[in-house]
Length: 634
Image (cartoon, rainbow, N blue to C red; front, side, top):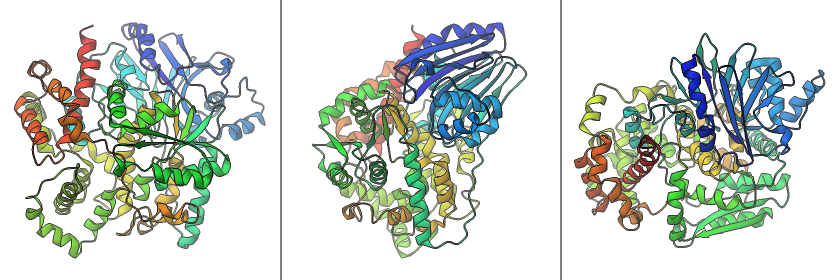
């Protein structure tokens, strides 16, 4: 697990920007604290920061060159089947100089080119350069577990593991107005765009070919959804269990200490249990909230740890403990990201890193097994009954009551109103509504008149449509799950997992995103996943005899920081600083009257989702001051 960056110049003017490679590497130091290096030849420069996980010797440092010097690679990720791939190459006479998976990837690309990607099992982003042909290949894993961003103009192609690494080469740091609007709508940035004008992310499962003649981006991973042959439900449960067991075993390969994140939910408990079966006595870690027992699930985590006999550590945090970490978390963001649950992952990663270098997590299951509350809501929208008709009829009454996330009753009314409003929408409109924090008109009210005018002629949903796939064209839940795999997973969940863990040089592995497992589950009937009463049905049933019975039939709480309370009290100075008139005037991005209205909503009796919307503003302002305003004034 590492960070990489580089520049391919098309002209001498473009090559001048390569003097900034060390600045770019400095922005990635947290991703690779063990060593760094760079390579330069002709019009090409490549840099790498290393976190040593497999073959920790100096021989495996990167960028890594072939023995004849023709090829060079920088690799971020892990290749879990590298030993079998290596053995097959050795049988054909290939000789290796290290024990690393990086060298296996290098030799595979030399011999098979892009076709080798389909043989890789793991998660990755890499840059592979052929000196003779002056050809650069950049690729990203199937689901976007590892990041890759790039900037392209007539003089150069700059790339890097994070947006800040690309920006460090001296390109203009300008906020993309459309992407700002999308960020304020969802509290994260849907891929492949970024908040910075001109920088985009290489989409999951895509590659980028760069040569003196052309630059071409295209998809290399074409998901194979096996045909459902009508096997019995019990047989599918057994097959699912076998695939997940294999996925976990693959991800236990490491030459450094390894553990597992254990929240006490179904997903992380399954992963931890399978890891413990393969590696008895494995370390497990959970984070609890001593002053918020409603969201503290550590009792369930401890129950699971005892059941599987892991070496378990609970980090019990007070509100002050969490507040003390807010600024540290904000400082590592390469672009604004306002999923508040990231704070828990940041704190857990920071503490677990003192014990292990690699951790397994249960991320990824909710998106394609149907684990979110919105999936039950969508099922209801596709199967309208008396309950849905009743909620629609009572919607005007529900709106008379206060809504918010801080109290159970106000949260209930908030959810009922969102459900009722969504029921009256078309499929794609409803999906985006339930995925969002702010409505489009609420976003526009926050933006300055100049930005509103700039965006008035654009249909902001247009750039999102490719992410929704067949949703709206085909009726069914599997299309919703696929949209989540394209939209929520790479834009939100995987960003959270990657940025928060790599902030502390911790590699986080996600067995639920083994591509063979994902493709199999996607082939199964949708009612085996969500049936109107139960979420993740087949996953829960497949492991019912494996997990403690107490994990079943209990509410899924998740992690929420007390945003409303914090923003009204402890973080109120940040709210005032973020809306300070001279700052707003200097930025030219926001409308003071819209911000004032949002603050009144936050401090009022009926806050709704104002706390989450204000949090998004604070995150953006912190990022802007550091990455845009601060850099421009240097």
